[in-house]
Image 1 (spheres, each protein chain N blue to C red):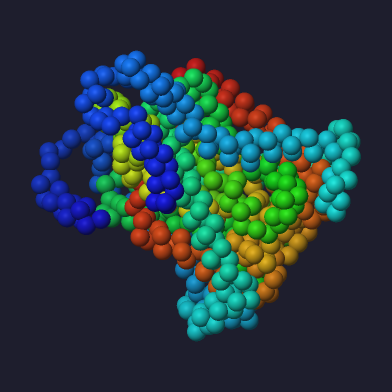
Image 2: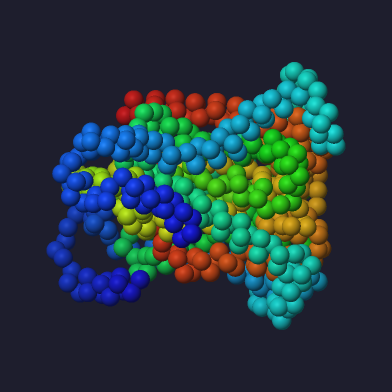
Length: 342
Length: 298
C-alpha cells in the first residue's frame, strides 16, 4: 500500500520542487487560490492546470473501472442478446434480432423463473425488513454490552453465500436434518424442504433473511439514533405510550431509510443467485427437480454456462435490468405518492 | 463495552425524577428483561448455524445422516479440515483469495478516497451529474457484465487467472460514495485552502491533508471491501474453476459434489469463513460503526 501511495506522491513533490525554491513566503502572499504573479507564467499555468485537471484525475480510476467493466459490458450484453452466441463456438456469432427475447417470452421456464424471483423476493425481503426494524428498536435501548450485541447480529453477514447455503442445506435435509428434527419436537410432520414448492422457496429465503437481517437492523438503528429526541418528548406529553411513539414517531421518521433498504433489497432479490444454486446441490442450476426455486439469476447461469447459449443468457440479463428499472420507477412513484399524502 | 458496564450501575443508583417515557437519541431508555430475552433469541439464531457448522465439521459423514443430529463436538475436526484443505483445494483457494481480496482492498481504498475527496471538496464541471451516475451504478446487477467479460477473457487467454476477478473490482461505487460522505463532514475546507495558500499542489494536498483526515474511514472501508471481495460469488465462479479457485469457487465445487462427504463440506465452509469471523472478532466494532456511518446519510 505504501509503495503505491508513494508513487502517487512522488510526482507531486517533483512538480512542486521545480517551479519554486522557496514556496513558503511567496506562496503565502498569494492568497486564496490566486495564481502566482505573471513573472513565471508557466508556473501559474501549471497551477491553474493542476486546479482544473486534478478533480478529473482523481475520479478517473473509478470511471475507468466502471466504464471498462460495467458500462461497456452492459452495452455489449445488449448487443450479444441480439445474436446467437454459443459457448461451444464463440467466434461464430450470427445476428438474430429479437429472437432471443421472443424465445424467452414464449418459454415457460422464463416466466417460472420470473415468478419465483418475485415470490422468493417477497418471502425473503418483507419479514427481513420488518424484523430488522424491530431488532433495531431493541438495539436502540440502553443496553449492557451494546457493541457486543451489534457485532453478534452482524456475524451472519460475515458468512459467505456459499458457506451459509452449504450449512442450511444440511440443516434442512430430509433425514437427520436439524430443522425437521426440531419440528418433530413440537409435533409437526417433517417438511420436504428440497422438493416441495413453498418449502424450498421458504428455505432459500430463510438463508437470505438470516444473512441480511442484522445488517439492515444496523442501518435502521443508525437512522433511529438520528431522530431528534424532542419529537418523542412532545409525543409523550401528548400521552403517547411506547408503542404509539414507535408507530407515530419512529416509523414516519424512518421512511427515507425504509425506502432505501427496500430499494437495495429489491436489487438484491432480483439478482438472487448463489443461494438457490447451492441449495440445489449437484444439479443446482435447474433450481430443483421441478424448477421450483429457479430464479432469473439462476436461469441466466443455466442457459449461459450449463446449456451454453450465451446470447439467450444476455437477453435474460437485460430482461432483469429492465424489470429492475420498472420496479424502481414504481417504487419512486409510490414513495412520492406517500410523501404527498402525508 | 467496559465503559457501558461501568456507567450503567451508577445510572441506576441515582435515579432521576420521573420523566415522561421517551426514546431516541441521547435519552435512551434502559432495556427491560424482555428486551434481553428477545435479543438473546436473535443472537442464538445468528450464531447457531455457525456453531453447528463447527459441530458438523467435527463429525463423520455417516453420523450426520443419522436422525438425532449431533449437538456436540466429535473428534474428526482436524481430519475433515485436512481433507477439505487438500482434496477440495481450500488451501490454494485461501492463498488465492487473500491475494485477490487484499489487492482489491488496497486499490479500492486508494481510488475511492481520491474520487470521494474530489466529489466532496473539489469544484468541477459535471460533478453533480457524475456523482449521480456513480450512485446509479450501484443499481446495475453484475449479471449485465458477465457475458462480455467472459468472452473477452477467453480472447485474452486469461481463463482461470486471478487478474480476471481482480480487475473489475479495483474501485467500487459504494467505496467512492462512502468516502465522499465521510470527507464531506470530516475534512474542513479551511485545511485544504490553507494548504493551497502555501502553494501545495493537489497531490500534495491529498498526501498531507486528505489521507490523514480520511484514515479512520479508509480503515473501515478496507474492512468492508475485504469482506465483500472475500465473499464475491457470481463472477468468480464463472471466471475461475477448481484448478485455480478462490474460496467461494472451492466451496461451490464442494457443494456440487466434488467431495461427497457432508462433514468435509462443513469443514470447508468453516475454513472459508474463519478468516472473516476472526476479523469480526477483532474489528467488529469498527465494521458495525462503518455500516451505520455509511447508512446514516445514505
